[in-house]
Image (cartoon, rainbow, N blue to C red; front, side, top):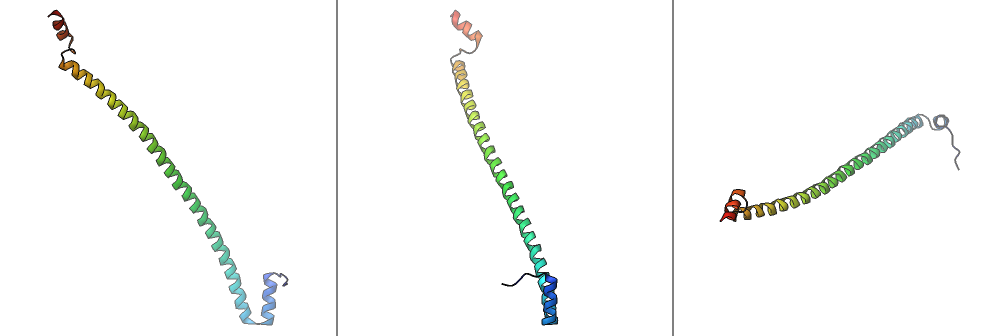
Length: 112
């Protein structure tokens, strides 16, 4: 098992043992470590944004479904109202055709 030592001590040991190439490797290692942390943070932020967007789209879809349900109820009530008005207008038309609608005509028919 290799004991864990701080990065600076590891760099000094590598520079003493191997030389300048180890210093370049150590600089690359520190840069790579920083970039990895930065990308990890970035990916975490992107993941959070995606979750928020998914929730937003889900809310939009839910609102659309509720709106369609309300429109269906309104349409149903409107159809019932139109049917009622059609029946009433049919009765009025029948009374007009048989001259039972106008009170004056009814009085004249009653006298006859």
